[in-house]
Structures are given as structure tokens and as C-alpha cells.
Length: 113
Length: 116
Image (tube, rainbow over all chains, first blue to last red):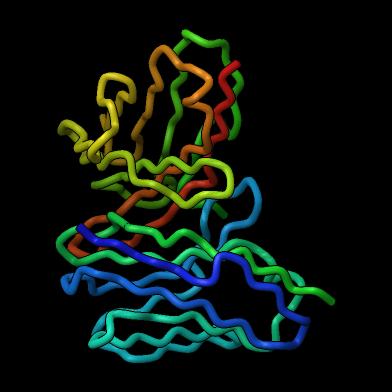
């Protein structure tokens, strides 16, 4: 089955700096890679996603890159703000198992003013 | 607003009792719902996949007699934790998938279960 590894487990950044979180996956059949933000006591919220036919996607301060050959994808947050502090999860899924996610271990991001 | 609603958002029960958690899709018909479990400071682990009108498919290591899942309609799936024990205390999260091969997908806000 799919195995998703995520690094780092914690990330502390100064407000205004960039944050990068990296994930690798094992199943070449995976073709959908979402990123979720989870605040304490709440469900995960989708912040950005990318499909395997695209190498990069950007939405304002957030971007995701995908390297299918190397089987890794990354989340980039620029100009970080205190409200970006949360746990971020990467995930992988395939069209055949749409919505059935294998999540990474999560990254606790702390943005200090 | 939320398109997937979970109820209750938190529940405390005594050991040995059963607890039912509901997952509802509010704005769309969910052909498939997924149930995850999340322990403190850990990731979400898929427990089971439920399709409307059929039996749930459980992930390896998840006791189907312990975690009863019912998906009786296109907008409601329920998870019943039977004979709950303190080790069942966790955050339970559902997600709902709409129609089609890549239908819309939304997560609920989660339900915190504490078993005393």
C-alpha cells in the first residue's frame, strides 16, 4: 500500500519568512496530493492540492510542487503570518481510491512574531 | 459554512457503554464516507470506508465488531463505538465524497471521544 513520509515534524519560523514542508510517497499509482491544515481540536482543512499531471500550483502565499519521478512533493508558504501556525498534513490518493487518503505524520508549524 | 457536519463534537462516556457518532453531508450526496481516527499529536489513520447501502470496508487491524459503521443514506453515515474502553478515547473524523470518480471531498470537524 501507499506510504507517505513527511518532514520536518516541527518547524519554527519568524513571521515574514518562508516555510517548506516535504513529503515523499511510495505508490506510483497515487495521482492526487492534497495538503491540509489542522488547528487544535478541529478537522483538517484543504489548503491546496495538486494532481500528477501538474508540476506546480500556486494560490497566493501557498504553493505546492510535485516531482513524480522522485515521488516527492512539497508545500511552500511565503510571507508567513502568526495565523499560519497549525499542523500541516500532506496526503496521497489515487483515482481508483479517490478520497481514501494516506496521510503524512504531520508538521507542527509555529510562526513567531 | 460546513458542508460535512459531525455530531456530537465531543462526548464523554463510561467504560462499557456504546457511543454513536454521526457524519452528515449537508450540501451534496455522499456516495462514500471515510472514517479516520487521530490520537493526540499523531496523524489521521483511516479506519474504514463506507459506501451507501453496502457494508463498510475496514482497514487492517480495525475491529469491525468494535466499530460499527452504517451508511444508510446518501447524506448520513454513523460510527458506533461499542463497549467503549479508555483506549478508544480519540478524535474521530469523517470525510464525505461526492458522486463521480473524483467527486468533491470534505472533512468533518471531528468528534472527541473520552472514555472514563
